[in-house]
Image (tube, rainbow, N blue to C red; front, top):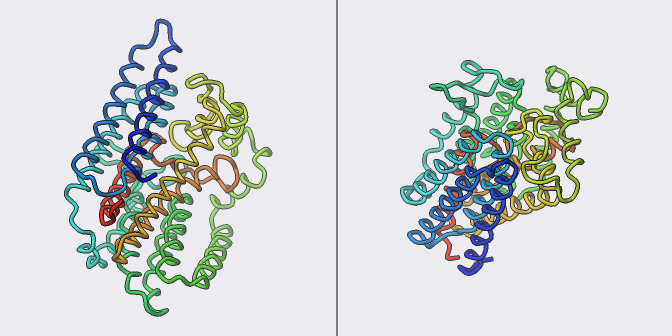
Length: 401
């Protein structure tokens, strides 16, 4: 897919999907829920106008990145409407904010090569945002990774991930020998330790995935990757011995049914929800998200599978894969190494987040409790995801698509 005709066809499909979804939701109430119509129309207008602005005034770059993000966001807004309408409205507002930031990045951000010289600044900001909640943090859902800022719950590590990508890109672009990897390795290990102390194991896995991916692209040496996995394994064993919350997550993962009424209630209800939906689901808005804890954020994927079927679950995974492919394609076509590594890191950030959350809610890996990019309810995640993809969109403009 690389033509304007393909883009327009996919945009038209997105309009139809959005309007049909909200039409189905409107039929669930008697009399018909007219607010669902309004939500569907506003969502389509917001998506369509944003695509028009990007395509009309900034014709260079890969527009499929925004289209795939739009589809995922619409799925999230529709699902949230069925769960709790006010959350859907707030999510649409955050979507508008994210799109605005996305467009502003494309408009205002100069050539990214000029940002490669701020390595020390990225280093300081990475450590600052990664460690901030240890002192000022508020515990939520078992993890101390949130800060209350003027009434808003903000997750500093979300910003820290972007600064870590920028730091590693500026540090690894000049890689020549082993000693060039020492300081970046220390920074990554310290960041991982901060996440463990905050009980934010999901972000720890994402940071590891980002670091390993960028390391391999920068060095092309498999032995470094093997060393990283060995060190990560050793660190995991040590964390298991030292921290109760790590042992608890592993215990639940190994046998969730033994603790189904207490400690593993979330994961058991998640698997029940996915199974009850079957291939085609019970219908949008007709599931039972009230039985799934934190259904608007960490466990929104099981709700989607219950209401729209496991086929929709697979479709979402495919869309994420296509998004990752387009982002990585932009990375490998760009010429300067800093921009390439930055795009790789930001692409890996989204991909790892998807793998960790889907693996967690299906009990394929220990549950960590993070959000699905663009689908789960939450302002911090939505804004950060749009910032990262806005940067990749800017990088993709260096190549004629």
